[in-house]
Amino acid sequence: MKKEKMNGRLRKESGKMHAPSVVLGLAGGCLIGAAVWLGMGGASDLNLPFSHADKPAPTTTDNSEGNVNVTPSKVMTLAENTIADIASEASKSVVNIDMKRTVAIQAPFSMMPGFGMVDPDSMPKAQLVGAGSGLIIRQDGYVLTNNHVVAAADEIKVTLDDKRSFMGKVVGRDKLTDLALVKIDAKGLPVAKLGKSKSIRPGDWAIAIGSPMGLDHTVTLGIISALGRSLDDVNAAEMIQTDAAINPGNSGGPLLNIRGEVIGINTAIRGGHAQNIGFAIPVDVFRDVVDDLIAKGRVARAYVGVYMQEMEPRVAKSLGIPDGTPGVVVAGVAQDGPASQAGMEQGDVIQRVDGNQVDSSKSVQTLVRKHKPGEDLTFLVLRKGKLVPIDVKVDDYPVEDNDS
Image (tube, rainbow, N blue to C red; front, side, top):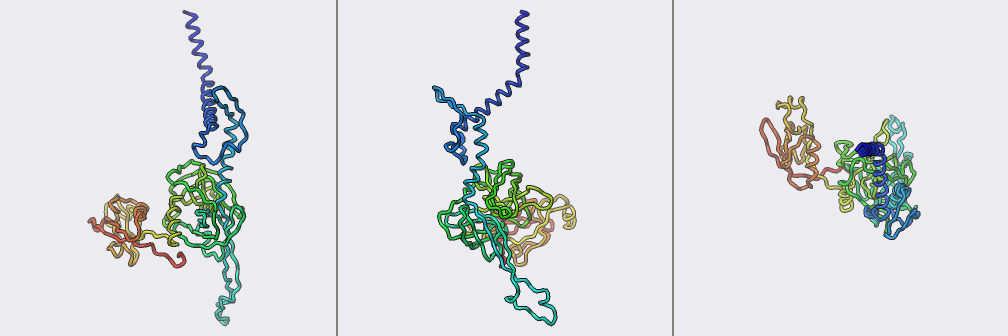
């Protein structure tokens, strides 16, 4: 009995001593299991952009059952080459965009008394140059880029990954999303593979490709830092934030996921002392914009002509309503705009849009943007203590001459 107890105690103590080895053994088993899964074709189920045929043969041991042992170094080789394979394939649809714009330099004395007006054609000229990136979205020569890359350009040159160059022409642009569509005379071009916005999560890998500082087809790696970022109240897109390095010249280039799918168009960076805070337009946003730009050269966007202000205690007091009243205050209405024509007034408190309760100007904008020009939109506003329904006919967002 004593011996059995001692053996039992020894066995328990032995178990305690080797517990870390058991954990390590399990971890090692998981790693080897993952390696075998990758080696036996599991990676192909994920549709990762590499094939095993062009990789060095792993050290294997075959047995009668046909099992294959894949070394951990093989797993590391696959991981190391994945980004390179993705970049190599995706770069085929990424272009470099160079733009030129000629401006007149006005002489400082041209308006001084005694000199009269100077003929603009006789003024000295200067040529402004800029560079950016773009993405081939159709094999017949349609290239997507940022509006700020090609805005007011007199000359646009598009250079492909294979170093061929074409003169480009802007066929449509949208200031609100900062997107533009450029057409080049080419056929059979490699088209980018697009992903979906709904699949993006903070922490996912992110790969940026573009021409920062004129260095074409530069590849940088990072993660998705956040979603739903708003750069301003006007921009229609809720941006993807990434820490993949983005610099001047990356604008218009793609942001990719680990499957090599385009999930965004790089468009802005945070300046000042910030580092690696970049923003991209989500893929689901530019899908819709591209369709409109190809069909009409511009984007039809819902417009009601309301200027809004968030509800605050100070604002509620000035309106003579209880603090904590839900809704968004109408700070003003555009003259002759849809809301004005429907009877909406300054000081109204928007509480519902199409039956949906709202508590911020952003929530109102989101509901309005779900409608198309010509559709009806119902607002429920609080006015002098009473709820008033207002039916507004949605109009097309007014376009400035330099936006068309």
